[in-house]
Length: 104
Image 1 (cartoon, rainbow, N blue to C red):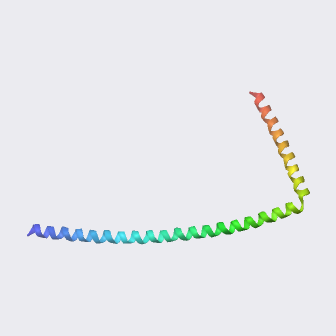
Image 2 (cartoon, rainbow, N blue to C red):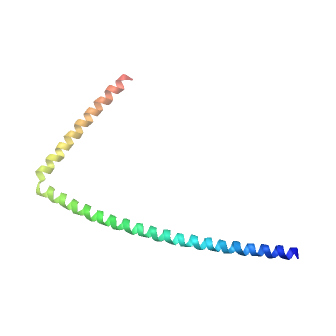
Image 3 (cartoon, helix red, strand yellow):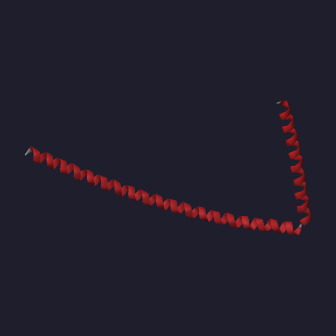
């Protein structure tokens, strides 16, 4: 009798554990589906934002191209000024590096 009671108790506990495990599986499945939906929504939002950014960038690029084509002298002057500033900065940095090397 005691063996049957123990067997019945163990079978009941095993059944309870299986039911609890199945409940956990369902919860995990539901959370995974929710997470998948959230990720999908985030990806859709990111794609829309990227498209909007691309459109805005394209529009600004066209605006800049229009300005350059309408004012080529200003653009070439600005480019020349930037080149001169870059060369001057390079010379100054090069001289500073030479002084530093001489100390060694």
